[in-house]
Amino acid sequence: MSSTKPSNAGVSQNSQPQVMNNITYNTSIYGGQGGSGGQGGEKGGSGGAGEGPIVHQNFPSSTVVQASRLINHCPPPSRIFHGRRTILDAMHQFFAQDTRKQKVYVLYGLGGAGKTQVALKFIEEWTHFTDQLLVDASTTETIETGLKNIAARKQSGDSVPDALSWLIDNQEEWLLFFDNADDPNINLNQFFPKCNHGNIIITSRNPNLRGYGAHSPVSNMEESDAVILLLKSAQQEASEANEVLALDIVKIVVLEKLRQVLGGDHQDTLVAMSNLAVTSNYLRRFEEAEKLQVVVLEKRRKLLGDNHLDTLTTMHALAKNTS
Image 1 (cartoon, rainbow, N blue to C red):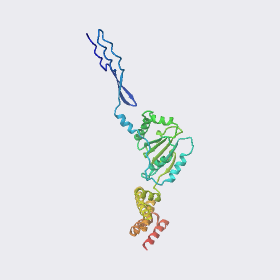
Image 2 (cartoon, rainbow, N blue to C red):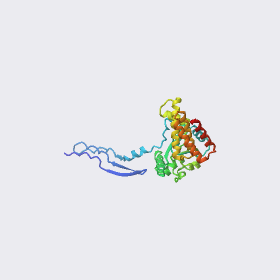
Image 3 (spheres, rainbow, N blue to C red):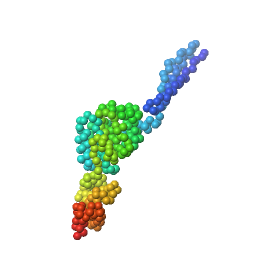
Image 4 (tube, rainbow, N blue to C red):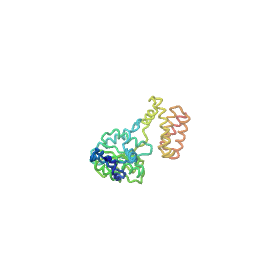
């Protein structure tokens, strides 16, 4: 008497690498489990039906890392954001227009003036954007990386042309936000989708980018807004005494910024110095106020002459405070 042995699993194997979006996936196909042997007897029974092929795909771990990088959403503005209402209202008015053309808005100004925060605040307020797509525009490489990530996120490919094609084909109110486009050697226009729909916001230190569309300069905050922002960030009560101290700090910061950017002899710097002298005098720091006014007077005499109105005003203020 003889009996048949059950057949072994995995009787065949076929491995085929597949490439999708420049990522290689290894796919292996194994034969299914063979059927069990037949019952003993004069003739063994036939084996049972196989279980069919088993497919195994090996996804590289790098795909998980790449997916984590495909985030282009705009973050919210600072929780203590305050002011800039004039600029925000101008942006609301511009984007509310039915121009049937692609809308481009440029926010330009010195570094640290708050351009990015103004843009993020507007994006938070404006609820009509169907997609909010942030691109770091610091260099050509970061722009290309940002656009490639958009293409991958939208499952439209993995290249810059793929991203631009998706934006062109997607005729909705998407927003492309180019942040920190400061390099004057970058032709930003090459990264604009060539279509009559969609929206673009640009922040830059380069005032020449104003030619791309509507624009607003972003300069130092109004003193009143800066005082409120300082008190909010320090979590201090908006009392009269605190406001005076905060104003003093604001004027010191503004003065130092102007000295760095414009120089000590610039008219805006001298105005800031004179304003700080007024606050110091109010806080009964008379010696400090007098020193500031003496510096302002000497510089204005040198730059403007003894008979200029600003020189005479400074001279009068100094005489009044020392009498």
